[in-house]
Amino acid sequence: MKLATLINSVVIISAFALTSGIAKAEPPTNNNYADARQTNIAINSNTLSSNSTTTSYLQPFNLVSLAYQGGLEEQGIPNGGTLISERQNRNIVAEDLVKAAISANKLPPQILNDQNYLNAVRSQLTSLSRDFST
Image 1 (cartoon, rainbow, N blue to C red):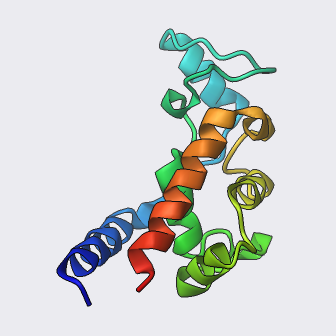
Image 2: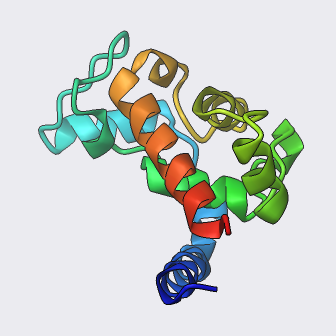
Image 3: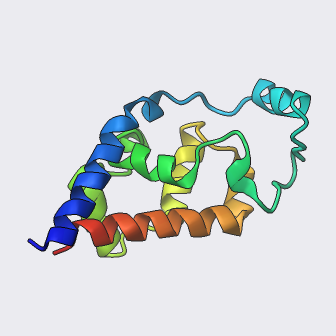
């Protein structure tokens, strides 16, 4: 195994180990949006801001981590190495993870229209797949 691959693997595994609380993330509720408005973060219920990764829901990295740790298994997303394998075989794409998270009440439905968020999830999935490929 190349040293860079080993280092990348250790970094990824460490990141997953440190984010174990993500599976318990609270789903978005109207109260979360009300709290965001109280702190002067404008959120329109029909459309998300163009810089959606700064709002109060799961960040793309955290979504991929949640899936990797098995937090979306009830929604049909495999965990661990199976997730990586399915991603490498193109059987799972970013939209699948986002739809599963919406189904699990981890993300608001309108996030499917946010191309910046979807692109960031794609990037995280691609990075995960690259780090574990030989």
